Length: 330
Picture (cartoon, one colour):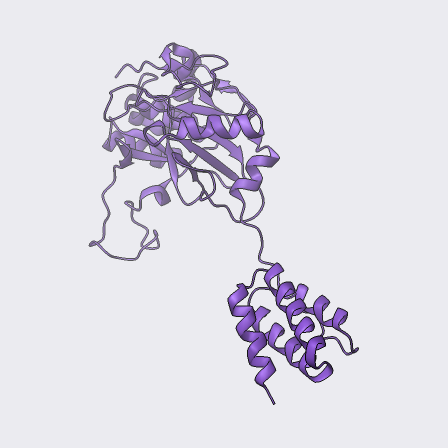
């Protein structure tokens, strides 16, 4: 089946709706790990060479078939598997609800089937000749998914106005034709989250997959297309790293209770209390004040301690009740 692709407009303004790719065979070039491309014109020869050891399998795919592009991607290091539209094409071998991640050794486990094994790829596209190409997100990579249907292009434009434009990185346009994009990045260190990105933006990691060019979108019939297939896969800018990384949990610091007498020491202690210890810490400090002060001095001391507790986030009414409780403590 003859495939036609598209080249995304150069220097697309992210503040405007991204335009769908225009017809151009450059979009059928296959990204090779961010280091280069294979031209479609040379692909047939490469495929013939690869298939030379496969005997009659050499006639299964031609350079115009999606299977040929699947082979080319695999040669470039992408782990691929066949998709029906945007979903895995190979049905599960198990009853619904079975917990198996491929340990059974059978095909039909979605993106976990993805591989660079050329024998397997040729056999699968022989079985599913019109299949699209799914690729598991490589280890050490992350994909920013921009979905205009949910305002992703607008969200990204806002983020770029606030923080600066994203550097050029390997990216592909969705065949939906609405400007949706997959931007491939070197994954930052640590756990990742999309919760702070905003509407229409999501992350795809090793636990997921993307549909690769020049697959055909099941709704529009248009091809997915590389923006600039020779682009490097770059590191995220610092501002985007901050948005998508989960800050490591740090243990709450503990502060020794003051042993010296005096209001200043008690106020300092309360002002350094952490969430989870503020109420108990305030009660202890107020009890110390009750033992050290009387009359007007005690009133002033408790007021100062309550004010310090409010400064670290305790509700004023709760702080006042805690101080009153300490005043009643024998």
